[in-house]
Image 1 (tube, rainbow, N blue to C red):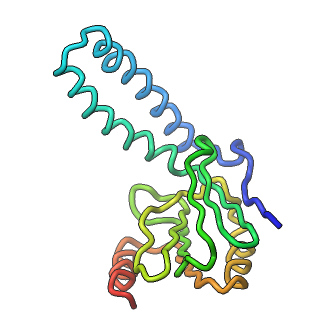
Image 2 (image 1 turned 120 degrees about the vertical axis):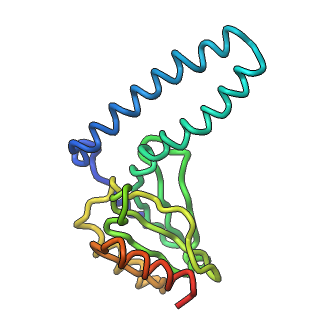
Length: 176
């Protein structure tokens, strides 16, 4: 049985998401008009190099916005965290391969949005944080109970200060 934990995009809208969307669209227009188009027209190798460097920077900026809009799909044998805007961008892990799952509600710092971190068995940290803005906060308890019933260690951290986050992060890295 497959269970989707996804809410409508309109339910995620707030001032910060609309402002982020506007910044995303404006940066896309500026990048295409003033960097990519002149590079294609001139064909100079230096402009191609500069375009490549700026492109890497722009991808990081765009991911900081798009990377918040993930939702969770629970299968009988695996968990999938999938992006709302870029459906091909997802991570799937079998329950047998997962060491622990951490829910950061929210992640302290500049990117203060709810996130999930999936750590493979044998690893201390999980790697990337996937912003789960598309998951309804009311569903967190159900998700945690289902994952724990599958035998997965689930850790939930709520409203940590930056200092508490650093202490928890240090303990995770040390394997405690």
